Amino acid sequence: MSRSVAPAELKAMLHDKRELALLDVRENGRFGDNHLLFACSLPFSRLELRIAELVPRRTTRIVLCDDGEALAERAAERLSGFGYTDVSVLAGGIEGWRAAGYLLFSGVNVPSKAFGEFVEHQCHTPSISATELKALVDRGEKLVILDSRPLDEFKAMSIPGGVDCPGAELVYRVADLAPEPDTLVVVNCAGRTRSIIGAQSLINAGIPNKVVALRNGTMGWHLAGLQVERGAARVAPAPSPRGLAFAQAAAERVAQRFAVRATDAASVAQWRKESDRTLVLLDVRSPEEFAAGHLPDSRSAPGGQLVQATDTYVATRHARLVLVDDTGVRATMTASWLNQMGWEHVWVLKDGLRGVKLQSGPSKPTVLGLEAARPQEMAPAALATALARDAAHVVDLATSREYKAGHIPGAWFAVRSRFAKCLPNLPTGPAVVLTSPDGVLARLAAADAAQALGRPVQVLRGGTQAWTAHGLPIEAGKQHLADAPDDLWLRPYDRETSQEAAMKEYLSWEVDLVENIKRDGDAGFRIIGPPSGL
Picture (cartoon, one colour):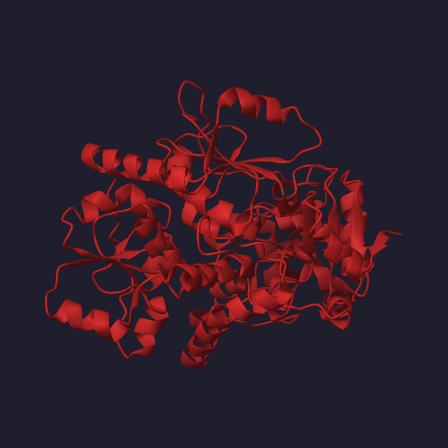
């Protein structure tokens, strides 16, 4: 039996300055309905895929929560098997937390999004409405529109004429994008957070241009009846020597003002040896730069996204975070915001990529339990033959979004954490074959599926990617749902219906976060220098 933690005890843990990982093991869609402020979403369905990355130190205090369906206890048992030694379960789950008089929050990445609203409220970040911006564009005013989101989001929906320049890249690249001081710089995102943080980053850096955030971002533009652009691929260029010199001087001013601390390779080497503190090295450059060469034990965490969704990258509160880049600009700008968000142990690695052997390739997170998972496998061609003879059923563990985009014809969508409820509903008789995009999750889930069905299951070797690589067919749509597709929290523009209503509701939710955070009292946000924090 796992140790139980009462709500009042957990509340005290949140303030005792010791390392703590608070993990909500429900599906992400359920998490988005209501959760504790500083809980990180780590569904039981994908526990092995992300726990080593989110909580790398096995002696970290961990508290698990759910809504009373015993997922937390199951997760605690599994974590214990992986060598985690200090795992507890929140007594009564999230409803126990609410019953104790504490607040629950809806949405995802709430601390980061609340911080964006806090910054606007405290710094009075200037903004411009969509209709005002459109009028300026139509008049031919001198301006540049910088979209502070990753390129995939920019391609999906952007402001016409905008240029993609993700958050931490703004100060790094702005001098070449707006070389003349009379050029208005407009920063936008999908909604509000990255617009506000991006605009305030440029203001904090002291660029000579007037800077404004596009109020309510691309959603506000769409709601104003204006046309968004889809498929655009305009990307901010790397800085020129002049642009880099400007950015480094600006970053140095930011470091002085916002108490950004630097460290060196020798100190990091010493920290790596400390078994009682969590050390996380985060490379805040673009994913492409990371893949070209990075420190072997670092992880890709582009700076703008790290501020926007900190809980996606780090689950251990009070961990020691070391930010890495090549020039210091992006790491310094990111650190300046993490400091103000309440992360007390943030450092920039000085000259971190110089004179060391770098590793190439994308991030490859450690998957726990994979070596021990040895289910019987079926090759794609053999599965195709079995399906043609009605001798097999395929159960797909992809996310509901991935499943809808394309799956093996006839495959059933299922949620791993609820196998006991959904798999017995499959037609009886034929063999059950699990798949997932690359086959890894299917391998991990095979034992759970076999237990739910009371008979062996097989796994598609190489997953759905191997199936398509063999030229075998794929179908799109939401056919054959063995379980509710509540595994993902949907952004307003991901909804199939009522997108405009969802956008309005989301934007109001963001604005309301400041008051809700005040009521909760745990945030620890502060603007360094006047005015005071929250």
